[in-house]
Image (cartoon, rainbow, N blue to C red; front, side, top):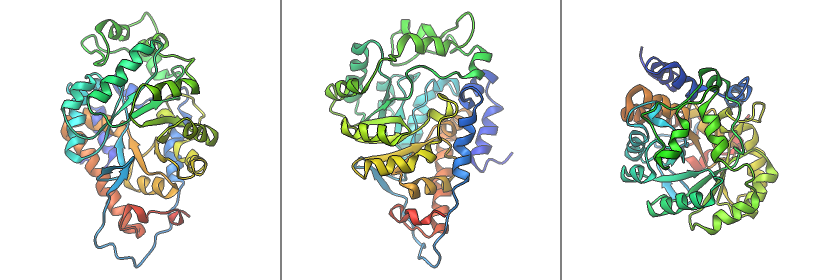
Length: 355
């Protein structure tokens, strides 16, 4: 089969993965209504192209938090990447670095944050706040020391959503995999439970459901890195995030993996952009599968988008080369879409392009 778009990459990857691993990557919460809505919301946004614009040369370059980027696309934090390929996050980091794309590394990486840093390339660190605040502070200090340029705090996971594919499969990590950022004893909690999902049991023991806005202030006090809040879907929460010193907001429903029935990221994006009033940058994830989706998101008001599952499918399909292929496909589609809407630069992608 010829692989020409991200859906083709997924199909090719599924042929190489065990069912439980493929379901872990693909699945959402409960009936997966929100998972489907993430795509449907993008597809519902029609564009009004400008014509007779000189698009003979185009630039996809932008900047996020003052950091130059070759295109307005980052790699979203996704854990357990060695489920997809033996090289896991190291292959993803090498691919991202080669393409100049910023990788947001998950707390639940199967390589340590120091190992990923050694692979080079621009990088942010995604953080969950754990019951053990000392462990959380240590992760922050390690990320800062290893050259990560921002912290991405996931705020939409006080408890793990009901991911029924994982429950049916009794999902657990293979015994030869571990969490690179934690002690071996911590990783052992992911290796099997009597019934249900080992991931759900692991999260229940580690994550802190009592984490609040006051704790965001504490987190900012232990790091000099800019703090980005990921998982915001409401204008009032976005505004509160700005008031608590957030440097950016990622509008996200966790890829449809948390609350089924939650708004899509692109659907919630307009009110968040309006609420922050340009004081901080706003990004969005969930459902980006085409270059034209990036145009749609930027037209609504996002500074950039993040992609998660397509990177994992590329990794499963062909390792580092597969991830590079995914990034190049999206870049080439974005370049074409910008030409066709009459936007020679990212700055020219404005709200008037939306029907």
